Amino acid sequence: MSSVTELKERHLAATETLNNLKHRLNQRRLSLLDTDIAGYARSQGKTALTFGPTDLVCCRTLQGHTGKVYSLDWTSEKNRIVSASQDGRLIVWNALTSQKTHAIKLPCAWVMTCAFSPTGQSVACGGLDSVCSIFNMNSPTDRDGNLTVSRTLSGHKGYVSSCQYVPDEDTHLITGSGDQTCVLWDITTGLRTSVFGGEFQSGHTADVLSISINGSNSRMFVSGSCDATARLWDTRVASRAVRIFHGHEGDVNSVKFFPDGNRFGTGSEDGTCRLFDIRTGHQLQVYHNQHSDNETAHVTSIAFSISGRLLFAGYTNGHCYVWDTLLAKVVLNLGSLQNSHDGRISCLGLSADGSALCTGSWDTNLKIWAFGGHRTVI
Image: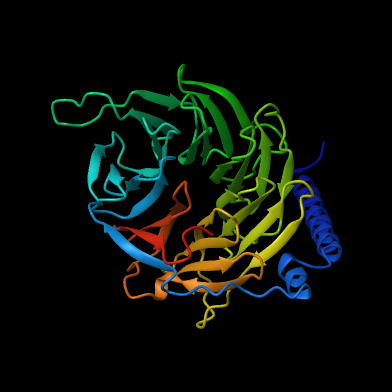
């Protein structure tokens, strides 16, 4: 029988071999990428967008939370936003008037994510209690004026980091968790329909931090994880990931599908955003801006404009870059404008019609940025 020392040595040798193979695979992958989107666009004579401070203007600041804002989501009919905060509350805002329509005190204050249902009738949230709680906006309030939980989705063995309703369905949603899995839920029954990852080999090997469902094909979704990868899943085949996307050198904090559904973007702890093609598995572009102090600001959240020409990225240093996705150039930094946030940008999202961007921050506020002048929708 092998001694413990021998087993340790064999394990170390196997780990070294695995790491060498990973490195060789990465080098081979890079050698096949002879160009990126920006290089090709420049060769075709394309020029960067002219986009300035008058093209995206802060028109409202939503004040009401007393703790850091962690998450936000728009309704599909554009004028309402739900936000989740360290203060243990969800607030539903009318984005046109800045008024609060609901303030929901949560059973567990440690909330990390929130989402509106497609009809806007329900909101979901999750956090360190490892459950996803559903609130029906039309339910009567209790004696203290609080909305009660209408459904609790229990089954994760770790915190719930992200949740999103399946488009056009109020009855199904997908969650991502610190237990390294994603789950598709049937809200009507409160049961798990499918589990993605976990004991399956192609699952994430660390906490899942973010998910995004493909708007063009709601059976497909992508997840980002602390294992520095993004994975593409088909809800009909839970046993294995369709593809694994490598390239990042840190946690993948945010994933978001590109408007055409054939690509998706990622934002990472390594300070970069990346664009991947789900058909080829290739990395198409890296969006990286070297900061003057050589400090790497981590990317916390990303969103695309309605055409995909702009990528909005929030950073831990309070910057919010507007990237030209075609030329990989920063065309505006919302963090440098006079009425910007005072803390890290923790979340951001675009309204359904593409006419406004909402940012949430550790400064406890949310801000709505409207496209000005001829830039109504890009």
